[in-house]
Length: 114
Length: 116
Image (cartoon, rainbow over all chains, first blue to last red; front, side):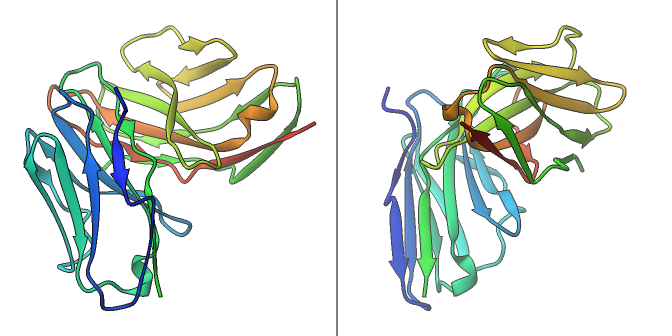
């Protein structure tokens, strides 16, 4: 398996623009997570899905952020409008459902908002 | 809410020596998982080792081992025979034991430098 695939690897955008980050989880994994990593706040969970249904979005910073999982093989994280403080590395991770499971991470998208 | 604390922002060790990274956590749960993840400069998050809280035996993976002290809520990572490739950020993480999807709660990380 190719692992969790995120695109793009890097994104530079101007303040106010819409940004869409994409994730393809590992086939057969039922759970999908979006994390954000910054120097100040470390790794924070933004939202996670189980069987394509959002379970906990309490980490989504504000209404400018939205996430969707239209099917088991694809998820998006959208920021509209983007702001410089959104600059961070965004990770997608997936895991199979079960007690003894681990999360597998993508390589992340480095977002820079100027 | 569960919290994870890594009190060492940076550590360094001579190549071939042993280093221990500290992690403490706070939870009211009795069953859970603990993890150490490695993040090299490539950004990829790589699972190093996992410990189930209901197991008394400390987990080991080749040169990596943990010292799990449940009562003290401590979960340290020992790296033996350090190699240059071990240089990375190391994150301790907690996860509840649950059949459904459960999030990982991460510590702030420890940056490990290996001196040749």
